[in-house]
Image 1 (cartoon, rainbow, N blue to C red):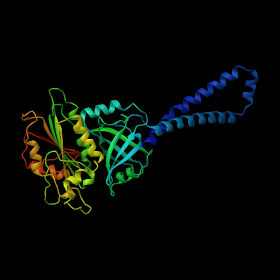
Image 2: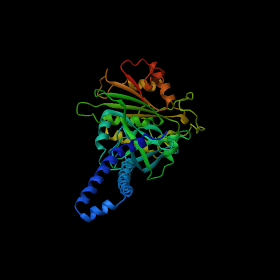
Image 3: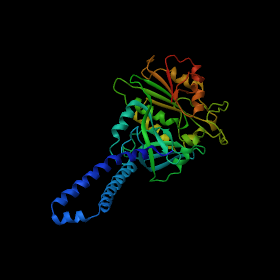
Image 4: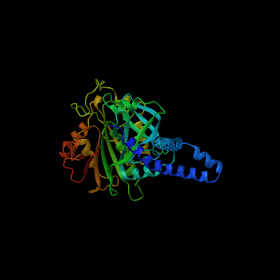
Length: 385
């Protein structure tokens, strides 16, 4: 099936053909009436030759218009928008671990997207769709928020993207070189964080940490003298290298328990007897640095606990209750305006809160199940991303 843009590109030719033809005809007659020699020359020109000249002029004009339209279609829009794909340039690809990298992409023209970004950041959790042009497929990815330590261009977008040997989009993106063009469309609001929200418990699996950073960024920007919202993040990974250097803020003891299946196939686990001090003194991964920067920016309002499959530490009911039953730093209990957000692989979300469902071509939340449903957290609203 041909791309829709080709059909659209043919339509503008209809009007220029007839208009241009009339213009040439009138111009020829006016020129003939000004000079007798020209008139006699015109009269001596065979009708077929005059028709050929007209068609040639029209053809040249049509070619010029077609070239302009094709050039416009190739350039595409300069601003991120939800209706058409914008071509961004890949300017950096920084490894987080052996399993993923942070991609930095720059729009075609600077200083045009700040308004679009700002509206999305103020709303809540949002994503953009990447297009794989060969297969004509798309996938949504969540931008990472900028931190106060960044010296980067405000117009760029950054994404934490896992390297998946079985993912068509993942293979395509990780195979791109610096300077490659990547087509993106958005923003798409995944969840609008209510203005009155005071506390968020964010349960993240793998690259689900990107929406967690977004939620923290949006929530904590609402801080003022009388309002100190807070977020607690439980981040689960398969390997320590994904969260190297991360130190728990609340749950310090390793947990020995059964292995869960929600991350899918694993590589052989490394020994779990590696001392905590040795693990935590390792160089911090790029994502851990993002979390630490958020903590520094909003002291006392951000806490993070790390859970690693290969160390046999997993998110348990008590880890959730430790936060949901806790008091606010000012000593008060907040009975309202509290959210639990969950993001990660489908199996992870299903285990925590039950699967999302499809109804009439639309993905819906589905009933609350999983371990969260067993905790009877009446004062907390839950949303699956």
